[in-house]
Length: 98
Image 1 (spheres, rainbow, N blue to C red):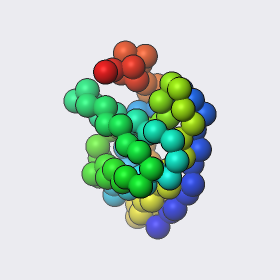
Image 2 (tube, one colour):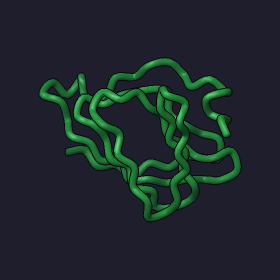
Image 3 (cartoon, one colour):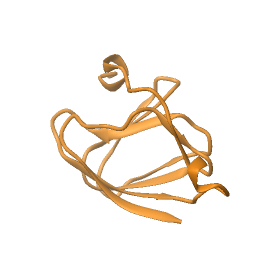
């Protein structure tokens, strides 16, 4: 199990990626955005938790106006190099989706 506290500056976010065994994200401060390939963008506040199933391509980060911190929890794949698959950068229209 990997557990990490991750901080994002306003407007910062990950690239598209997926996890072999899923990922749980628990927001500890600020406002978080979580986007999926179907165009859904979820806003989460401190104390809220979002789960990304295994293999789901997603991104997460801060809103344009606020810092954000979350605790990321995920289980390593059998081959640790396969735990996270990094993909392309998130397009502006995906990040700024209403």
